[in-house]
Length: 277
Image 1 (cartoon, rainbow, N blue to C red):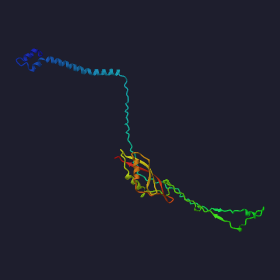
Image 2 (cartoon, rainbow, N blue to C red; image 1 turned 180 degrees about the vertical axis):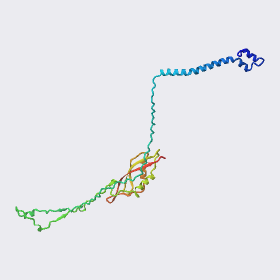
Image 3 (cartoon, rainbow, N blue to C red; image 1 turned 30 degrees about the horizontal axis):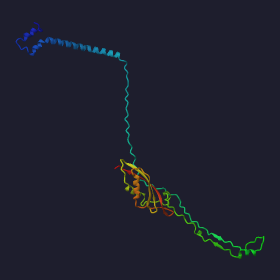
Image 4 (cartoon, rainbow, N blue to C red; image 1 turned 90 degrees about the vertical axis):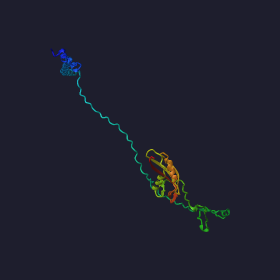
């Protein structure tokens, strides 16, 4: 009996439990062997044919493709966008004392002119009776001064008092033209210190330099008058500077011209560094 015959399997499992898996495996063994053989043959054929198919495809692709171009790829660095940095303004200089240049105008004093005495000559009056006794003659004779006195009257006027000096003008004099400049007691440092302490800073959102130019008149008694703001940077700084100057109680030393106190024009620049609140 053939080992591959199904009857041999029935003989072996006669009287035994055929529902057990061994009987089923034995009965399906020929079928399983054929399938395994077919799969093995296919895999073997695929392994043998794969290199041949790959070489054929490579040659075919090489023929169809164009020439290979070796291109160089240049990497371009994109520069970063420049970052704008806002430059802060330089810190303002401290308040400087501006001294006006010394005057080079020489003092010129005019001496009142003394009027000379004017004399009035009184001519003698000749009457008709004097002419009767006169002897006619065509000759000129020298006058006889010994016959009498010639009276000369002096003019009794005000010319002997001379010329009175002109009354000094009440107009203020330019600071630079004065012989003695007006000065704040203790110097300009004290004056600027007073301005800094009494100046009310305006509200600003960042550090700001305010440059104010004011003018005023230093009176003969040292008080300030005619206070004006020539340059106002805004923020109410001009009005505040005017208020501070009007509140000053300390009097200046007045300017001197020809030995007398005079009214003097004064222009003052003020620089204030304001910090945000």
